[in-house]
Image 1 (cartoon, rainbow, N blue to C red):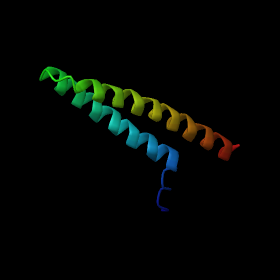
Image 2 (image 1 turned 180 degrees about the horizontal axis):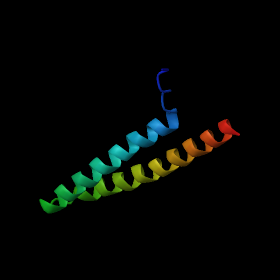
Image 3 (image 1 turned 90 degrees about the vertical axis):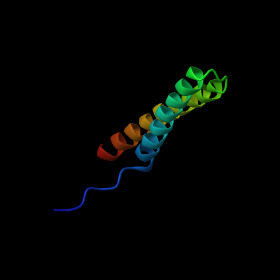
Length: 69
């Protein structure tokens, strides 16, 4: 049985940015619960990484579609 192919770079980047997004959301929540205004920075990072996740997900889908057709 052949090994499964490695995920495309765009898909891998989408997974990494999703992990960063989730961790920064958690950090923002913890910061705000502790009363720190540093949570604003974490929330901004969450928004940026969320946009990057959508971008790389769409890029991976577009790349996959062109290869199969």
